Image (cartoon, rainbow, N blue to C red; front, side, top):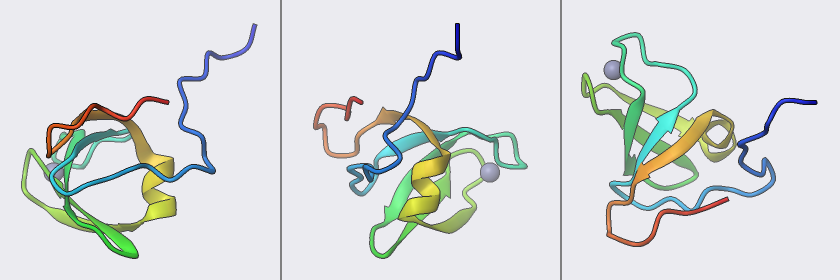
Length: 81
Ligand SMILES: [Zn+2]
């Protein structure tokens, strides 16, 4: 029996929109796991919901770090994978 993979297809970039909230695999030093999308572009801007710190990640990097979607900012259904 292997690990049960609750995984994102690493070749598929997440369908992100502004204000979506995602949970990352590792916590921010402040202890927060949840981040809001604040910038979309070649790099994705994320704001920590716990402390308000902002970071920029490449889509590829973010795709590796996302654990799950928590909420969408525009009310569309949560992306499922
Ligand atoms: Zn934080």
